[in-house]
Image (tube, rainbow, N blue to C red; front, side):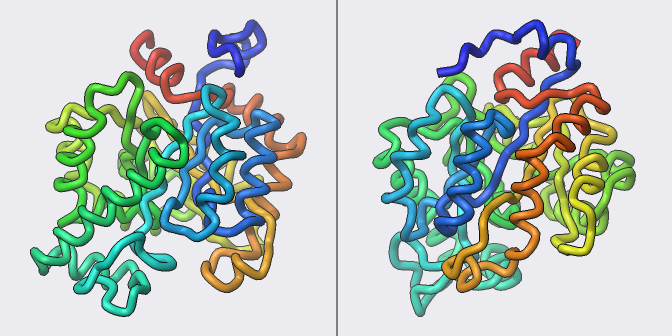
Length: 299
């Protein structure tokens, strides 16, 4: 286990940021890439998709990084199959598109009940495999912060984990000026608009969250990911969290997710010298949220 007190080198590097790799257990290749970056200490957090068939077989390798990184639940309502029955949302036992989930969550009381029940099952699946609660919760395609879901989720997490030291929830919104200064600002603006009330719901539930969010990508293999990441380091908030999507390509990934070709580009970048150079140029280093929050409170 890594000692969590800041090293002399880290203090000289500047301010800490959480760098979180999404989609652990989505596919074996994605998981291998994330495990590699965890082992290299290039990322400081990762969220697992516990509804995916690979989760139980991959949980042991994930568990090996307990205490060295923030390990959480990447709630999934739009990819693969749900853990349990969802007759309104997934009548054919296949999770629907993001647009369908958003519509059902906004319009249907029965759908909202099914969604919260499924979220609880995905949290249970993490705890059963890991033997402990998650360090954080976020959502695939930011589904956790959608209107109709965000408030109910905040209430559930507040009652379930609110007293847990260090637990936090990803807030995918950010300040307008910060968003406009970065790549893929159109995506970020749309997510921030949908999640506009989510931060308020988190605070009302007594939950901690990041302050500042970036890492949106065009997911275009012709775009230099190093430039995108350097852009994500602009205009950071007080307690910033940056998402990323590294991984190796395999048939399982091609069968289930549209984001495929750019994952190895991200993996190679984070494992290489350009990542270290980008962090040094921006005056940041990767750390767990506890250290990021401490730095924010002392600034």
